[in-house]
Image (cartoon, rainbow, N blue to C red):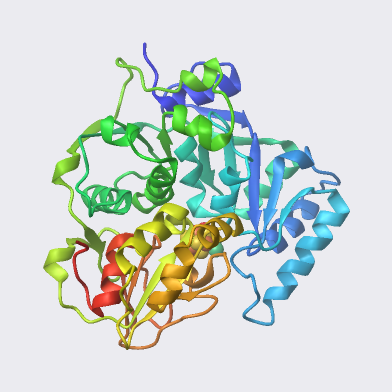
Length: 414
Ligand SMILES: CC(C)[C@H](C(=O)O)[C@@H](O)C(=O)O
Ligand code: SF4
């Protein structure tokens, strides 16, 4: 019988064919811990009685949520992390290079077909290169650090097929928002989302990353894209036979299949304060806004900044609106600097910040207060995430967000 991509990855890892519902132990190829959780992971690791890491090479520590510190207690996380690095010999450490999910594939830590875990819900992101990756808690992470293994229940797979050419003002963010609206926030709970079709094949790895990143907003355990030539180029590798085999088989068993025509997509937004409250931007036009945020592990990549720059070129951000732009990594920051993208954004009146999580989780720079409205390109519009609980967060694509910044209100990108 045929297999879905997740079933192939797990079979390759464990040496045994699996079916949904099986509980198996996998060898973890790479794991990621970020600054918020390192103190808890470190304490739990020692509490469990471990005295050395199973394999320091498999561990990546990234400071991103709290960098640079905005509250006094933040620095405690860095000190605790630095102690752990010293004591256990970690070598893959990033202290201000960007957001964890960007760095894990950008810096080459996760490759197609790998199994990776991270102490963050958006760890699903690495499915963009065809890896099985998922978020876990700090106790599970401590156990992985000591044993190199992790148990999982093999998920069922929902197949999503998208064919055709997207309208010009539509980005992959609009697709994943629409899908979350259709599935609802719990519609893919503990399932793998497997994407295919000509639209997906024509999409950049960066656009696939946006979609894999948000899979968790429908509850998915992971998202999977078949590795192809674009993936190989992005990962700077040649795909081996195993990696090339990561295609859902014709006769694989899927929980269900959802089919879309690319031409039918329009710019959309997730409205306050649920990720699955999806409306067409045209239904919301005219709603006044106070701020726009373009960044995060969802949409802080070069193509996102370029899309915003295309809209903002030669224009100005509306007087009363603050536009905050946060590249997802130092590499992206420097590329956007070198190719003039940041200059276009600065000229238009954007506030450009250091790479990191920044405003996405309401930490550094730009929190809002009662009655204010923000259009943002990140992945969650939960109550209180970017300021007080009376702030309204509308999630959108970078193209839509940039158009709103110019108009000072919600508008469709041209
Ligand atoms: C801080 C962390 C636990 C959290 C997550 O897991 O997603 C954060 O990254 C977020 O996006 O809300
Ligand atoms: S950018 Fe936002 S969503 Fe991504 S890891 Fe950071 S806080 Fe979480």
